[in-house]
Amino acid sequence: GENVEQHPSTLSVQEGDSAVIKCTYSDSASNYFPWYKQELGKRPQLIIDIRSNVGEKKDQRIAVTLNKTAKHFSLHITETQPEDSAVYFCALTGGSYIPTFGRGTSLIVHP
Amino acid sequence: DAGITQSPRHKVTETGTPVTLRCHQTENHRYMYWYRQDPGHGLRLIHYSYGVKDTDKGEVSDGYSVSRSKTEDFLLTLESATSSQTSVYFCAIRAGQNQPQHFGDGTRLSIL
Image (cartoon, rainbow over all chains, first blue to last red; front, side, top):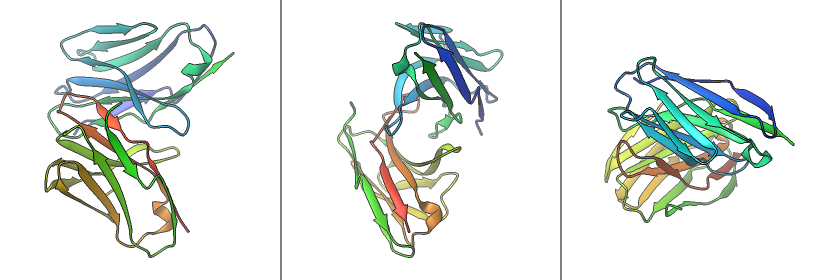
């Protein structure tokens, strides 16, 4: 089955810095890679996703990159703000009904 | 936001009692999922459904059962609740295999 490792588990940055979270996977059949943000006490929400025929996707301060050869994908947040503080989950799906989630990264942005 | 409603939002009950959580969607999505979320464990899949009356187990299914008698409703039942089932439960829906999941607001369940 699919497996995904997410690092780091905790990331602390100063406001205005960039943050990068990386996920590695093992199943080459994986072809859809979403990222979710979960604020404290709230539900996970999709912030960006990428499909296997694309190498990079950007949406304002957020970008995701995918390296299918090396089997890893990363979330990049530039010019971080305190409201970016949350837990971020990577996920992936391949040929099954079941998305696989990373264990999450707690991002703390210090003002 | 996707039309997905979980009920109840909060529940406190005693060990040994049955508990049913409801997930209702208005999106007509095929796939529905139940997760539990505990500190240090991320999101763990309990059961999922890929159509009416089509369900299967996830990684932490022991002590839980599900039913999906119509597209819009996915019920999670704890037949005899235990304290280890105290958790936050999230329902999610998905339109297709390479589509994102949309999560409900969660149910905070405490079993004393």
